[in-house]
Image (cartoon, rainbow, N blue to C red):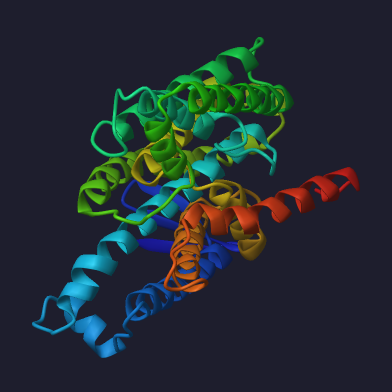
Length: 348
């Protein structure tokens, strides 16, 4: 493997393959990994009973320890699920924002998350599925259908970014209203369980959810590497990209489909955790100062947001635990308003 330095980038070659590495993004990714490791350890240590970091490390390494039940059985599984959910949402948000070329675009804004929510709530409210079991598969199906519908309606001799976002918002509103109908007309007890699922929570999460989501992320890794390379292609305006022989429609479709799958699977694992997919890519972009939204940094930022939000949700009103979606919503809603105000003032 060899490397050649350019302004802000390093060209890394391994045999016939080569790729550009943005140096600042690499340093930011290392910093995010360090912050994420610290947050995970803090989350494993803090709870109704405090565990020392040494004991936490021993439990994680599989060594015998009296805190094995608390750390290994109660706290570690939900943190693993939080890491995977945040990773999937951060990556999904980066892909959707790249396709839409809009910082306001994310799976929960353009209808994907609401598609998953409406499907699961409808099936739960009428007793077809429970909060576990088939609910994750229903969420994936609903999110995919909503994503395909938004993409199809936004298509008019190509995908137009503004049309994509506006139609997505319209679909979100429609699906939100449909969800309210399900909650009102369905069985009262089942509807209450659906409301709990809608808040987005890691409480009770286990390795079953983590395993399914981990397989999805591993399967998506090669496609994500392709998307990272293709990002530079679609950063040009459409006329320039077409003139260079790029198949923009296929690239955008592939990115949008991958983002839809990841967001739907994340919703299936933990319910709709709002605003993570909206915030993570923009935070990563500002940290990395790169030309495109950095996919790896976005994924790490999403994981950090979810794990940190879960820690706050568990300890803010202890011993009462808040759903992680409540905390991300409290932070994400003002952030969304700030983006709207900034865009009206002519911000990039």
